[in-house]
Each structure stands twice: as C-alpha cells, then as structure tokens.
Length: 291
Image (cartoon, one colour):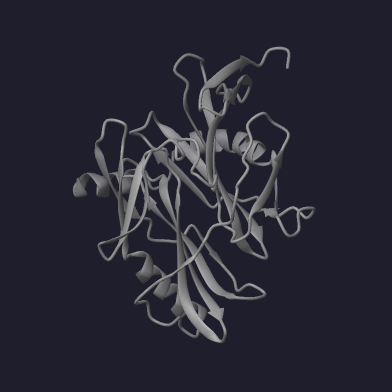
C-alpha cells in the first residue's frame, strides 16, 4: 500500500488540465451562491477568495475531481468549500457536489437562494496541542514548526465495504494565514489525503495563539469525507467520525460539515438537472428544461 500511495501521489499531484479547467467556471459559479457571515456581525459578508487553494483528483472513486475555496475573516480562513464532480451514472454529464466545513471559532450565518442549505450550529472549537514547543519568534521558523507538528498526525478512513484506507499528509499547507487583530499570531490549514487520490479527507488547523501573554499551539480537526475517519497524534486518538443517527454521511451533529449533490452539467457546461437533498438524506433529480 505504501508503494501504491507513493505512485498515486506522483501521478495525480495535478489533476488533468482539461478537466480542471473545464469545470472551474462551474465550480466558481456554484461557490458564489453562498453568502457567509459570523454571528456577531451578520450583515457583513466574509470575503470569498476568488483563486482556488487546491485542485485534486481521486481516480478510485469514479474519476472524482474537485477544487477547494475559502472564505476569509481578517485574512484567516473562516470556512472552506470543496466543489467536486464525477460522471453521472445515467445522464451524459458530471454530477456536482458541494462539501463545506466551518473553520471560524464563531458560529457562521450562511444564506443561499437554493434548495440545499448549510446551517452550522456552532463554531469550530480549538484544543491545546499538548507537548508542543513554544511558537517561534519569526514567521519562517513557525512555518517549520507547523510542518513538523502536522507530520505528527496520522489517520485512516473506512469505506462502505469496510475496507481501510491509510491517509497521508499533504506536505504543504492548503492555506497559510497571517496574524489576527487579537489572539492568533500565526496559522495554517493542513490536510490528510485520501489513499486513493489527492482529495483532502481530514482538515487539520494549526494556530499559534496568545492568551494572557503566553503563546501556545492549538489545533482542530474537521471531517471532509463521507467515509468513517480516525485521526491520531503520536499514536493517540484525537479525532474520529463514525456514522451514526446524529452523524450521517451528509452532516455531523453540529453541521460544521455539510455535503450534498447539487446539479448535473454536461461537458459543455449546460445544466441538465438540479438535485434536492431532503433531511433524511434522500435526493430527487429535477430536469433543468424550462428553468
């Protein structure tokens, strides 16, 4: 499995330009349907970074390809979206899926003029990273520290056939962000990637935070997969996502994570169908003709 993972990493480090370029206008249009703000300032939308932060491909899962976008609050990632697609099993096109996760400490207010909705119930909680060295004095040295700290996290996923897939760290952070006005001195968003491609399955947020004059490292993990997940640090379990009644495939208990199929487009970018997901997870397709 180690050799296979290494070969996949090399082969799919960059998705094919044709598919990625063809889908990007559709992905950008889809991510633009969201307006996100924080609960304390609900009338001021967060800034959506127009340039994607990462493209990926997973050939094991039906040639799935996706692109990540972030919304920023004072330059820091407050939410992340992956707009992804794969060949539809009946229609002559690709089914587009939205996958989202809240990153801000504060509850997000999300508005969208579409049937499918994302309503987080809380912010993403950070935890102190035990046994970590004190954050360094310079940004360059802190980046080195964050890379080393990220390497301490390992994980695996369990697919629908109960097969185990080892996750591996994407060496470079998905996003590095500057000091906040208060509290956060430095931070970066890392990910553990799929064993079958380069798609992020787990989000790992690392932050150097000052509290009462003391600097310390904090972290948070986030689910970014519909498979079951387990994450350890130094062989100690720190995060897991196991399917349950309050943790189905399309959201977690606090709705920090949300995923749903949205539309089907043909190769030319024409809308073929819209998809509605209902609270029980079932979906219904509506032909796009006349809409």
